[in-house]
Amino acid sequence: MQYQPSDYLPIIVQLIAAIGFIVATMIATHSLGPKRNTKLKNEVFECGIESVGDARTPISVKYFLVAILFVLFDVEVIFMYPWAVNFIHWVNTSAAVAKEMFLEMLVFMALLLTGFVYVIKKGILHWEK
Amino acid sequence: MNSIIALSLFGIANLFLGFLNNRKILLPATLAFVLVALGLNLADWNQEYLWFNNMLRTNNLSVNFASVILVATFLVVAVSRGFGDDEEHTHPAEYYAIMLFSVVGAIMMVTFENLIMLFVGLEILSVSMYILTGTDKRNLRSNEAALKYFLMGAFATGILLFGIALIYGATGSFNIHGIEALVLTAAGGSAPALLYIGIVMVIIGLLFKVSAAPFHFWTPDVYEGAPAIFTAFMSTVVKTAGFAALFRLLGGAFTGVYGTWIYILYFLTMLTLIIGNITAVYQQSFKRMLAYSSISHAGYLMLTATAKVAHTQSSILFYSLAYSVATISAFAVLMVVAETKESNAEKTNENFDIFNGLAKNNPLLAFVLTVSMLSLAGIPLTAGFWGKFFIFSDAFQRGIVVPLVVAVLMSAVGIYYYFKAIISAYFKEGDVPAIELKPIYKITLIVTTLLTIVLGIAPDLVKSIF
Image (tube, each protein chain N blue to C red):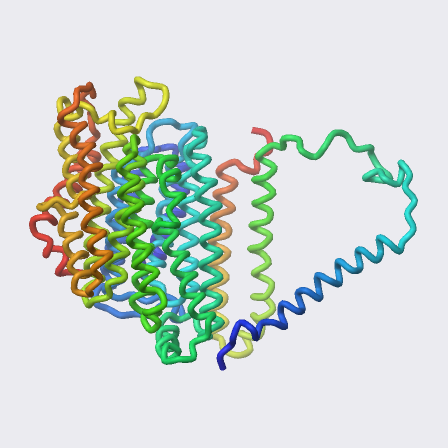
């Protein structure tokens, strides 16, 4: 079975339909809905502390380091969920496979922890240094 | 294949060695790590194995390429001198670790059996190179180079990945031997258009990484902006790995549809040779000249990658080795001389004129520079001559006449700009104070020079192994 580029036409059609739906709904709600502009309604936040300045202030590099580390470890931990869900299945089928998979996860965790130790030793999590 | 696992662990070990507060230990440790990896790599000699569910294949070809890469890495690490004594602004442990990690990527590009592994290896190598390019944090040129390299490299990776996806769409396989079989049957007639587009896109992605024209625009800026030691690493290891990958694809998976890409590659080879050599003539900066020279050497290697005869692989290997050794010695000389001059001037000067009068007080450095320039230019009795000789004879056997004539003419142009450095060193007036070299630096320079000469006199020593 050989596919030609034209066989992928349905994907483009679906893409256009999806984008068209969003655009059409946005235009429809904007033109159909009532509009009452007041100073209070146009505020960014209707309640809470009044905003000061704009968002483009310099932020300490440390913040980005911590943020990216959070993302990194978060994503890596997510790999454990599918592993954990499948683990009981491996245990039920064969002990050898289960053992191997357990070792694989140990290796993964070891690498993760090594990275964590490196980060702590580098002092990246020390907020004030 | 154990070399990949070992290098990954060594890289991590290197990161932790950095906490010892002893910068002296890092250089010998890294050299030892590379040597161990080289030993593990050679242990795979004369064995054909598939690893990790048919993801990687080791055979003599891959062992040879990986050895050239590891030898080049060893030499680059040996001339790195531990990245100086600037405690605050340099992080040698991290640099060495990233270098080791990038070698993992390079070896994966050599041994891949599955296009996914090609992509992963290429990315490990490229991301490491983006970081290493920007390591001179306070230098604007280095920052610019890193950003430029990253943006252009990301586009090239995208094109490569798209090509892989299209090839998968056309053949239903990521395995390069599977693709080879399917391409051969498809070549009989009803090959889908996706296959041809995919093949051309993959070739474009790889040609970008080896800086062939017209995908070379990043090369001079990146090579000039990056710290010289990483430029040396980039122009040897990345190029060898890129050509290994290109050779394995062109010589294996894509052979069936030869007619699609061969004329594109002929044209690009000639373009690369002409642009690389002619532009190099006009360069004032020695480092920028080496960047253009690396473009032109990519052209010579492309010439043999397209000339598919039985011993093409040994020509590519020999040329990569000769080119790597000569380039590393040229960069090593440039680094010490530029550093000596730097203490007198504010800005790093990497022009040809820093070599003026080099021979008077530093005969060894001048000799090393001369031999490496002669080898890059392809003068007989150096390794570079035989490298060019094998490549040209491959092309001649294959009957690729027009690109061959261009290559011969352009290597004559090359002599002009390589000799500019020699003329500066021996015949121009200038004062370079006598430079004191550390023993390991001196030994490495002598080894690279000797290797160039020995391979120039007896090329069969290495060629018969390949």
